[in-house]
Structure formats: structure tokens, C-alpha cells
Amino acid sequence: MKKLALVSAISLAASGQAMAAAYKLPESSINATALSAAYVANAHGADASYYNPAAMVFSEEQRASIEADLTLVHLTSINLTSTNLGTDATKTENIPVPTFHYISPAMDNMRFGLSVVAPGGLSKRWKGIGKTFAEEFTLETIELNPTISFKVNDRFSIGGGLRAIFSSGVVKSSDQGVIPVISPSRDLKGDSWDFGYNLAFHFEPTEQLKLSATYRSKVDLTVEGNATLSDTVALPTIYTPASVEIPIPASLSLAAAYDVTPDTTMELVLERTYWSAYKELDFEYPASVGGYTALFDNPSAKNWKDSNTIRIGVTHQVNPKLTMMAGFAYDETPVPEAYAGFELPDSDAKIFSVGARYNYSDDLSIGAALLYDQKKKLAIDAGESTNPFLSGGSQTFEDARAYLLTVGLEYKF
Image 1 (spheres, rainbow, N blue to C red):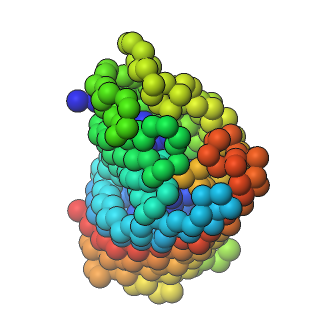
Image 2: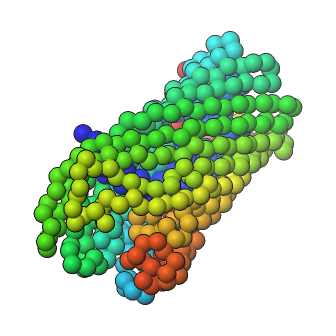
Image 3: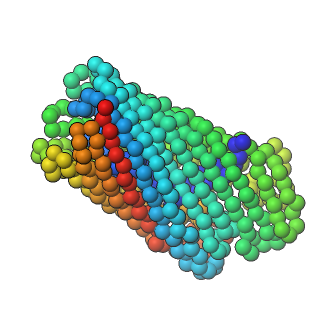
């Protein structure tokens, strides 16, 4: 049954503290992790089906190809120092994320692909006072992305696909003496299927230069289900139907890849994510929820802003067997400081990555990549937050880090 845990978790929002701004997770293959997702114009393996379907028809490999990867995500503890709430920290998280990519054999000017990825996700569990707002907020997503590519001429191609996203979430909160008079809690679980599309354009004006543009549509998560609200002091437990709608934002990537030498390619990606679609979180109930209204029913303003990410990657073929990669990205947060909180204390991030692929044979290659995501310290001045419990003092969230290790293999047949 669809319930409200999902959208409550999404209101944190990706990428745990996600691996990117908010809750996006753009690293869904060996190459993408190794290059800090600076992998659009130069996408050329099975994972091109996800990162740039238009480029599938320009692949030198004419056979079918499949890639299976596993990314191990380690999220460090986030530490809070508050002048009115004291100190707290989140639990560390270790999350396995499997992904799969496939492209068909070349068929004249067409090619098909399929990717199964996790486009976003998070897990946040506070140990102390933060339980009032986020005892557990977990979001898991799976995206099925069938794609098609068509070569218009020897230099230009187009591509696109369907986005089918399954999401599941858990949200738990329990008052730790912060809320006056009452001591409310909630325990929600849920899931949802929602749909969108993606488009891609690929142009090779010279033998050395590749230009690409990709667009992933907004996907509105529409969740209907049941909510349970309870209190240990005065209010009765309420079981009620509820609904809410939250957007997963659209994103646009413009990319250029240039062969500096026959063995070395550099790529620059400019990415715009349209988070401004997330203006408020408003749960709808068929009837009044009484004393819980102020906490769980009144609309909560979000007012997120569109964000930019700059990605740079370099790929170097050492020899016919070994390819090395490295990347860097600067990732802006979409969350204004006034609207940040325990659910997602997000901030700008610097991302560093390295990786390698080894051709074991003409049919099989293996690879591994490591990525480090370092979030800036988030300092919220007293009176700045729109959350009345946080505005009563100054809040400092720091030490947020993410480590990603991706291993996998690609087979051509």
C-alpha cells in the first residue's frame, strides 16, 4: 500500500546525505564513479544507455554489451553543535547499490538499451535530540530506463527513453522533550511507481570533439496511503488516509569531450537541476487531525532553488589492456540555509574520484572506482531557520562525508 513514508523521506532529499546535492545519485557505473559523473559526451559502453542514449549508435563496438556493477556507499556521521539543543550526531550508514546496463547489437542506424539504476536515495538516523525530527528517514529508488538511439547522419544522433521509478521509504520520528505539552511520534512506510522520460542529442563535428545534451524530465511522486500519528501524553492515536505530491526535479546536462591525444580524452559537463519545482510539502487528509495539525498537517515551505554542478573528467588508455580515469566535481546544494534541517542538512560539496578498467579478453572487462564526497560545514544563525525549534539558537552541521566504491564487469557478445 502506498503510504506517506516515501514522500516524507523525499522531503529530506538523494544523492543518504546523498552522494550529490539533495538526494541525487548520479554515479551508476564504473566509469561514472571514476569520472565524478563527467561522463556524457564520451559515454561509450553499455552504460551509455543511461548517460547518453544518443551516443549508443556511435559506439565502435557493434556487438551487444552488458555491464553489472555494485557500488558500496559509506556515509559518515554528521555532527551537530547547537546553542539551544545541545550536541547530536547521525549514525553511519553502509548501503550496497547494484546497477545494470545493456545495449543491443548495432542495427543499421538504430540501437536499443536498458538500464536499471538507483537515481537517488538517502538514509538519515539521528542518535539523540534529532530523533524528534528524524529518528529514521530512509529513501530507496529503482529506475527502469529503456532507451532507443537513432543516427540521423554520420555526425549527429538523437536518443530517448522512458523513466519508470519505484520508490520505497521509511520515516520515524519521536519527540525527545523538544515539543512542549505533547510528545508526538510517527511511524510510516510506503512505496510508489511514477513515470517520466529522458532525451539526448549527440554531435561529433570533428574526429576529436564530441558535444552532447541530455535532459531528464521531472517526475512527480504521487503518494496516497495511510498515516499513523500518536502521542504519549494527551492526544489519541489517529489512523487516517493521506496524500501528498512531491517532484523529482528535471535536469539538463551540456557536455563536451575532446581527445587531447589519441589515448587521452577530457570531458566537461555543466549540469543544471531544477529543484525550484519543490516549493512546499503539503500533506492532505480527508478530515482534521486535531492536535497534530501544527506538526503534521500545515504546509511546510521548502522554496528550494535550482542548482548547478560542474564536472571534469579525464580518461587515459595506458595500453590496449588498461584504462585509467579521474574526475572532479563541484556540486551546489539546492537547499537554502533557512530551510535546512535534521532531515537533510545539505551543503555544497567537492567530489574527487579515480578508477580503472582492465580488458581481461576481447569479450570481458573488469573495473573499479573510488569516489570521495566532502560537504561544506553548514552554519545556520539564530533566527535564520524557518523551523521554530532550530531558529531558537545557532546550528552547526559538519563532518558530512560520503565514500563510494564501485566494482563491476562488462561482457560483449
